[in-house]
Image 1: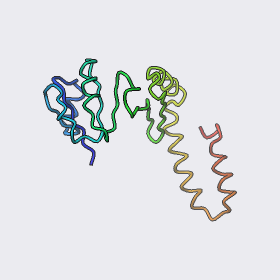
Image 2: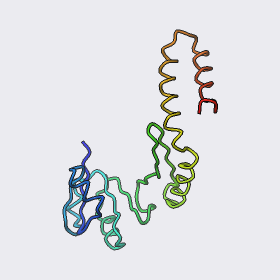
Image 3: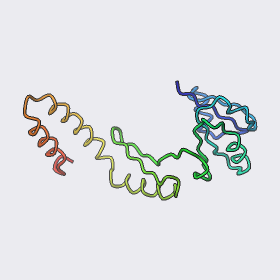
Image 4: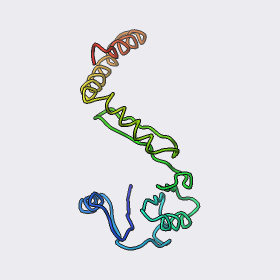
Length: 153
């Protein structure tokens, strides 16, 4: 099962809410290498470069590692993501510029506005109906293409 554990002398309000709702666990202390001995993934995301470096140097060889300050020092990066109900779009610059990734996401959020929530739900329901029809696969394909028309958006 997934288990997220935060080790830090202080946490943000958002992290505190997650601790309260038991979505994550938290240990109020400074980092020590023993904190990550059993980890499968480690994220160094402090606002202290020296602590992030200590974490990086302590990561066991088999562990996935994300370095928030310097992505090239890790072996995992995270894409920027936005969701609109069933529609999920992610953008990655593979650590080159998370800020560019966020700028692109902001542009996509404007392009794929709230209308897309209803539209994607319509596409989902229509697809389920079309898949169940007793017609030729080529006819199903044609119908699926047709519902992508801007008319339905």
